[in-house]
Image (tube, rainbow, N blue to C red):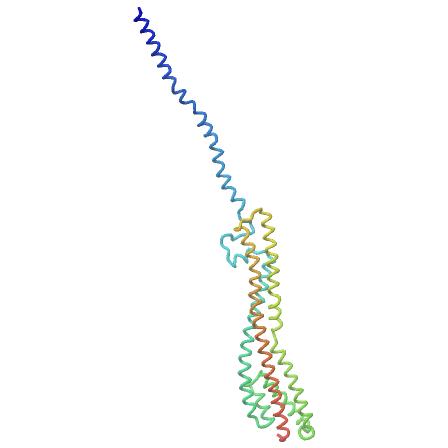
Length: 296
């Protein structure tokens, strides 16, 4: 009887133990809600990279910068405001015209000095006023200022003779005076001829930097307005607009610097040739006075 009771108690204990073992997996699965919570949080975390990716989009270059990433002088000009473009075009045209005047003047002075040297050598070999007139009016020295002066002086003496006036003796001084007046008229025309284009070069040299600065100020003002509208200080966004504005100042300096340098150079050359002209006028007047005294 006791054995049966013991066996029954043992079986009951075994059954309880088995029941506990079979219900263990349900206890092991209890942490599952935490996994579900992490899974629920996953979409929120996944949305974070999307927001981070969207953040740079807010600092994208504004629509006015059409060539972002390929900034060159050409693209900067194409993307600039229309006021800045007008300034750049005007400065480029002024620079081209200034360089044209520069090259023409260099060639003019080079040929002028060579022709003047040849004429003075021939002039000093003349034996009469008629010889002076023949040499000065020859095609070889056509357009030479010194030859024009000699032709004007000798031509005035010849006109006086043809008019039946006495050019020598007591009328010698009046003849020389008329010849000197004719030379002075030619000299005034020479000064105007040699100084042609100098006023324009002086204007370019003095005004071009300020015109370029105006384009720069306007361009930078527009760039700052764009910064305010886009609400960003990203250098990649700000730099192209400021570079476009500074290009105007660069073009202004490109136009002004050569104009200033060669304006001073040509003024020196003009003054030197003017001094040479004064010396030749004195030599011409002495030659005509001498020939009149000789009766030639």
